[in-house]
Amino acid sequence: MALDLHKMQNYDRLLEQMNEFRERGTDYRSLRGRMSEVMDRLHPKRLRLEVAEIIQETPSAKTFRLVAPDRSLPPFLPGQYITVYTEVQSVATARAYSLSSAPADSGHYDITVRRLAGGLVSGRMLDRWRVGDTIEASSPSGNFYHNRIIHDRSVVYLAGGSGITPFMSMIRQEATRPAGMNVCLLYGSNSDGDIIFHDELNRLAEGNARFRYVPVVEKPGAGYRGKTGYLTADLIREVLGDVEGRTFFLCGPGAMYDFCIRQLEALGVPRRKIRREMFGALPDITRHRDWPAEVNPAAEFSVQIKGKDTIKAKAGDSLLTSLEKNGLKVPSLCRSGECSYCRVKLLSGRVFQPKESLVRSSDRRFGYIHSCMSYPLTDLEILL
Image 1 (cartoon, one colour):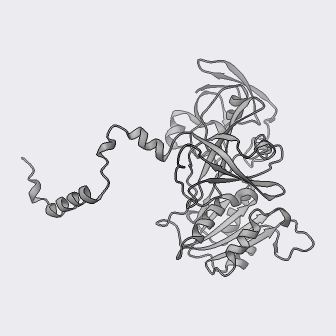
Image 2 (cartoon, one colour; image 1 turned 30 degrees about the vertical axis):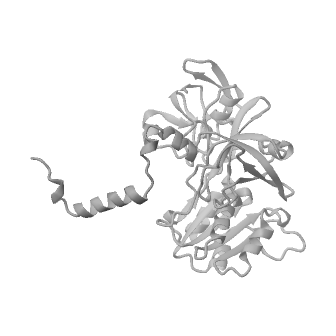
Image 3 (cartoon, one colour; image 1 turned 120 degrees about the vertical axis):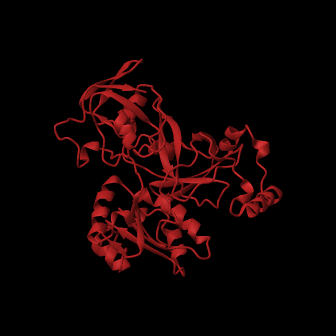
């Protein structure tokens, strides 16, 4: 039986809308067959960026302002990150850095980097990067951002150390909106002399009823008069009062997450109201609460790469790090067990994967692991 389109409900109105789109909308027919070109404009796999400015934020942190000399920069959502590709000691590697600039500042990306003790990449960036240097990076990625449909209009940001960076992008973006969200930032730092963006955050909070900034210092100096200690349930209750009707966002060192989530749960905040950013693996994975105590992190295991060579890998090094140290390039973005870009297939053997590694159920079923958050516990065979 033939379908009579003219009898469809609202058919005439649909025709009017189609004609209106043809007359006033964008005609994409000229781009037919050029989809890859269009996607490359919006989200290229790699970007060539140039260091345009270096800003000393604190004694241990700098902001690198990056521009694209030969193209426009892809858009991003406040809270997303880019991955910087580099080579250190002849090892090709990558690190993800949250964008601290606001999306409205479309002519540049800012990444703010704090020196990490023993860090392979952060020290090199802080000591060697100069204005005019060219680097390679990914397009913006990540799921740590406020969704106005799902999340509350009142939000609380719990930041620790360099975990302030995605929040800075969010706060700077909100500052440009005449009627935005109600934001409270509780920012934990080790010392009051090393609070990143402290002066700017104070300026943004002055006279702004929608933004409250509360620094919390663990080891304050003699002249410090603000909040001290940790981001405890008592402190959060003291600052906020009622926690109802708020969504909480967390970003900071790995140890901060377990602590702060317990504090929020003690206040009655449901887990669906808590959003956490992936912040990489612990510098010492053996400090993870689930690490098998019987495994020595210095123990070495053989990793047979199907169709390729066999390499040695330490239990305390992620599989991705061991592969990179042996000259094997594995695609990676977040290096936090979230994006699945670095996944490999585990054919035999056992690995330790922290619960924070967000492996899809389908990947688990078919034996795939995130190499950035997988640590060998036995000899392995894998497929790249």
